Image (cartoon, rainbow, N blue to C red; front, side):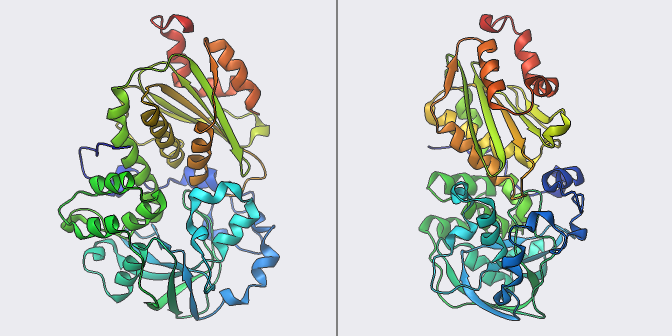
Length: 427
């Protein structure tokens, strides 16, 4: 699949609204104890950690001032204090094992919630304060983090801390959880990183815009998690514009860049001929996708606390696209729009899409990757096809727990479709 890059470089900008809002943090974390205030998060009281608390407290190997292990590889760039942020590698106290699964969200749907929590909480995070522009002239610690981030296979890494790591606020609105952290004083790589040739080429290309580099890497089969990692540590783009990008921001930025690279391609394709419904559930989430014959337009609907019969949060775009940030469902919007566009591009068809996202009570905040992967899983299935909207609605209602009336109260595209007389089957 070849994608056209977006017309402008994808420079990470705090003013663009890409950072998580307080409402997004509270909704995505949705904790009855801390109410999404991560400063109040503690291991002893966190209900999300009930299933792994005993396991974690027995992990003495996570509480050491000198740690050696095989990083998946993984790196984290914080957003607090931007443009001065905390950056460092994530390393488990595990040697001589394939640890790649610990940072491979593309492969996590087959695991249960406690397993994924154990994956992530076993990653110890080193933290070193750096200004985002230092990505262009990194010191030894930052250059080591960047070198490791380029790797496609686990790399032996040793970290030294100023004190023993502690677990504080492991959850965030978009990124997967992480384990205990401590201030980093030194980091070394004990082996040479295995770097894909295309990654090495584009990191060395300081005349190519970041958006073009992201789409090029994806076209060459580099995993989205690796692209996001390399983007986040400031290794892509024109030389004088490279900077560290907070991990949460980079997740959404890469989703958006890849989607923009597909939109123009999809808009030139013939429409699908029927309405299509497909869905996938997992990890206490349910994602349902409705495709309908129309120029590409998109709406994301997200519902939490289903027992309270809520009106879902929503964001949408018509055929002309959108010029503002989808601040109601934020990262979830970009995480589900990309799989829809991937699917349509592969099929060589165009359609409008409404994505329904349900979060159940036994949920644990794992990041927006679960929406992306559930959407991909749904789109990989054979769809249920319908000639009219009413029949499709019946199937949608059967697959969702929240009554369909609640969803339609929030939906802009459904109201638009019902008003379109030129599509006679919707009349």
